Length: 297
Image (tube, rainbow, N blue to C red; front, side, top):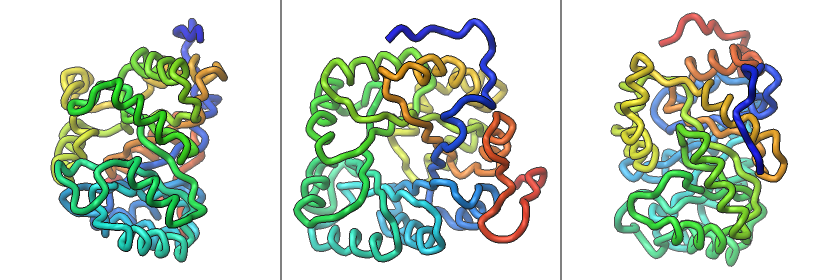
């Protein structure tokens, strides 16, 4: 792995990971209309979960989207699920709606509501129930405030038998991401990795929405980098980060398979940025004609 900064500015219209990124949304009121308005009909939408709102809004939004034919990936947080009976019901409801993929995490609750304390426990329970879902799991390029790096790597090694890919928590430093992937490969964790990045959004919105719904891991990373975000006029755009990550994406030994964009529900800004960077025009909506991206909220 010999990734280095490219000598010339990257032409991101040719940057393959931007062609089919995944868009993470928070299941708040109004987000379904924004998905319709700003994202292409064949987008992949991942629906996060928060300790303040529980898992019900996540499952409800995911099933509605999937029923309409949108490729949807709900987050299943182990600590928000009470027992195997509830898990069985969730898996049944998702399957009935046409959901074919989930993202399994431990969850931010300090104390679980039931018998599952970790993503690994939930993955094992899902296997015992039986399912045909494709499963993604979380990885942490930045140091987790509550769990040691060694413990996280060991957990990933245990979980990889139940999963098909890893999504990294958002990071703002390409060097950190590359070194983290290096560590995974050296320790025998060979799952493909989707790199998590924060979409273009103002700092105030990032922190306001994050605090409102309690997306703890994301907020911890944001607070750590808040000085850098303020330095760029109170907003963040991921262009420079993508430039720095391009060599790693081009190197097959890293096993990077795409981008996971944390939108913080700023879908208008995210879609506009994505189109300008070379993505497919976001005005192709699920229902109706092209959206007017100039009329952002």
